[in-house]
Length: 247
Image (cartoon, rainbow, N blue to C red; front, side, top):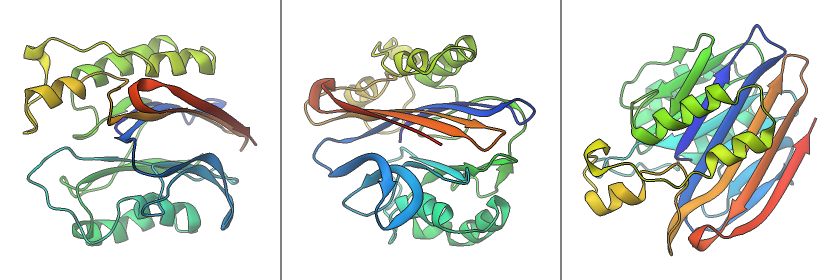
């Protein structure tokens, strides 16, 4: 998952509104959003290469999402980052208790941002910063640096979420489809070269080999109800399908 914007409103009927794009190589095998056959009550897409997920929710409303940190100097860890979200969704530990363990074991994974919680609380952890943070009410963005790092696509998507916060889910899916690239002088320098920075600079990424594989909208209600919609894509941004689930 490479871009997540979300409104955390624990005092409102809808405690969480989230819009997220997962960017990945098209050749990496993945399963679309659904209930996991080996873990009833867990819903999300799944990475079929390592077995984890980039975003998921449980029947009870536990939620987790993940992005990587873009830095070619970082070494791969011995464990897949997708396990970070999966183990939280499968477990019963509170978010702060789970993050206390992850904080000690963060070196086992390549760089990551982890967002997790439930209807009562939401937490963020960046492996480079090393300390969990409980989030207050607000509108946030997370890409491949840290929370609210002012990359152009994050700033645009976060403001677009603010403007569409009362809209329907299709409004948020439209937000996630924006393929405009900002001017070169606005791009970050993460060490991957200008051509790659350009490719990765839009909210929605499309090319022959790498791009946005899934756009997801999640709404989590104070009542415990939730709904989630995922639109899947292939090479050059071709739409492959859509799944919508509701509890």
